[in-house]
Length: 151
Picture 1 (tube, rainbow, N blue to C red):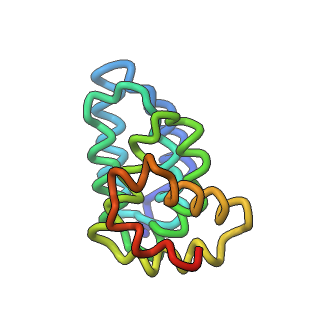
Picture 2: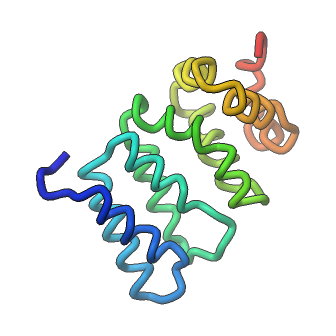
């Protein structure tokens, strides 16, 4: 991480503008996502994932999605496993959960992701497995069905 990056200050600013209620907040949020890309850590990935919701974001969250997906998988995958339950609660339509997990099924290292699932807490593991076995997920990403044996 860059020496002048203050995680606590960055996190406070990120969550202060995550409602996207003004153009200024959207612009600041995008600047914070850019800053996150240069300072990515597990903690940063977690905080970025915590900003996803069903709220209208004027396309801003696409940049956030790109940032977490570009992160090292050893940072992003544990964060995704740990935050999936919260992501589903904040986004009951599950659009972001389906997209974030589904892209990994199609283009990522899904076996590595599942290895993080297997090491997660029982609650996190149960949430993740239930989600990837759901009709809602499999209808969008049927390629994931080949990974379900033994889960």
